[in-house]
Length: 143
Image (tube, rainbow, N blue to C red; front, side, top):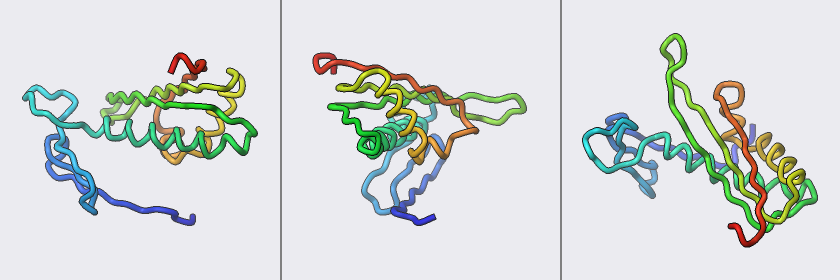
């Protein structure tokens, strides 16, 4: 595989610690999703949701010209749940909601299916994480 980009991040203290990109450009104090201390911070699932949403929306922009379609606007929302499977392992659960303007429902579904095939996050979780895709087609007055 030809690598186009590489980055790294370091976390210390786990879910109640700190994480930062190794180049120092961004960092977060972390809190567990069951934060009872009142500490303000971000959890890993929120960071994953933000990255996946941005990546999926970019994948749609990348594949739209190859399909001969052009949405006028799009947004992607990724809901991330975490739970425990039988046997004790933990896993993620994903709901991806894509809102598209300027396409028919059929065009939007075609675009989302193709984006799901090329998105690196989708490829990373495929077959390992429950992932549901939802599509909303809106007119310019709804966004």
